[in-house]
Figure 1 (cartoon, rainbow over the protein chains, first blue to last red):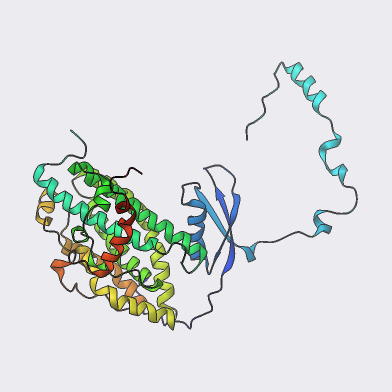
Figure 2: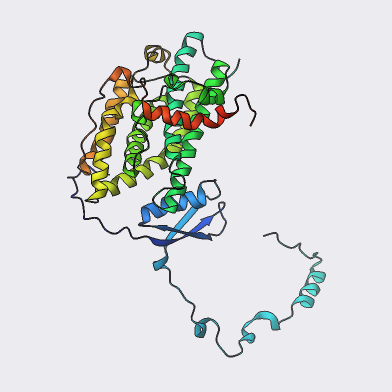
Length: 117
Length: 257
């Protein structure tokens, strides 16, 4: 709010709601994960509603609220699921297990425990 | 010594202050909770319900402090009094009304409540000053929410602005009742619980809201109609609300929930 001259009321627009995508961070250092979406007429109320839907139980330390229309959407199968065999681009062809075991034995190190996610 | 103890003469004055603040939060929280299920948007329904819960949480904390101070019970304070014994301000006695009424009431009350809380945060009674510090942090969001809606209604010509002006015409003459001086005010000032007289807080509140009202071309709230009776004489709208919020409690007196 400012103390400028009064602003003339604008004509009533149809209250158009649009979708906003909400990403949330559960604790400091965590990645931002998609939480869901809210419907709101503008960024200000979208932030309020995101806070209520994804933060009111103290389950988030940060929220990102993004207009769905601003998201670059990529789902073209020619780009993401090309028809020819691309298995050679996956690392599955290279079996590392024995090489790693041999290297550990040489260095005298035990196998590390699985990382908890 | 209990951390909530206070000298006997101060304790009586403190009890009066806590009761007025707790009743304010309880009544506005309960009034706003009436939107649950019928707010204008689904998202707003959740937001307003959550806000109402926040206010009831503030009331519970204040009643809890009052109960510790006076050796009573918070539920009993909230539910077992007659309507005439509540000390909320007259601003909250108008019934829910339409959405514009709710927004106007929220804006007027929240803007005044923040000024009151800021003054109490500097007060000498640690249990209250500490609690008030926490309440203030939650009020930030309440003010943002009410401010966003006030702006939206005021700046949209036609029905939205007309309804807001009608709501302000009804509510604004009672806005300053948040600062109705309590009979105990001299004792509170003497003890330093209240660092600043309510009349000064009212002026401070007018200074904070004036730029908003000027910017949105809305009339400034007038002086309170009956400054001394601002927390008395609750009318029919409150009797109805009281009937609602005590109905479950009265359905089985003494039951343990």
